[in-house]
Length: 197
Image (tube, rainbow, N blue to C red; front, side, top):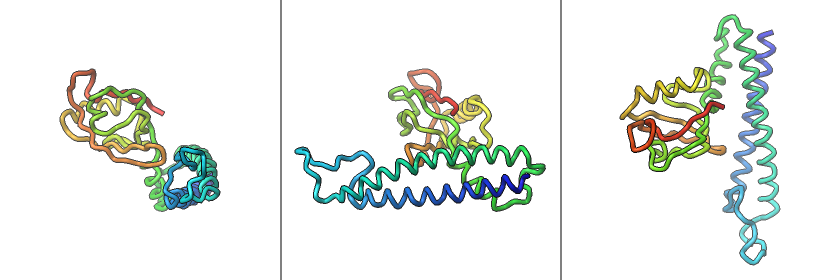
């Protein structure tokens, strides 16, 4: 049973890697044309911009959107698979080094919480965190060991006046931000509200 789940999860992880590579290649096409996902392809008078291969860019954009949707669905399936793998596994590691390594890589990419409120001039805002940033790591907390928001509160209290590394997912990109929880004119030590996903 466990072997089947393992094979299934590894298959899904391979698919995920393929999709991520494809998205990267398509994003390179956009960059080579000097545009991002939402930049205009026509000038102020409505004429196509000469320096842009409009067909190529439209195709790449459309394909990226489809792949991002596939990627989201895959991540959900992988998460469920991992859950099944660990709940049916007698020993956590099961002497499965490959699985462990790939899961560890994944754990450091899966968000577990999100910033849904941000106060101006707060420690969180001044550190470079943004509204809607998805939190992948908060100090030592990540998807694998996160239980509740009180975990984050504990790290914040113990880190007052000291730096905590916070890894966030913003769109499709990841950033590590140095956050210093401290007293300020507003409430709390961060000045942002975090909800679990």
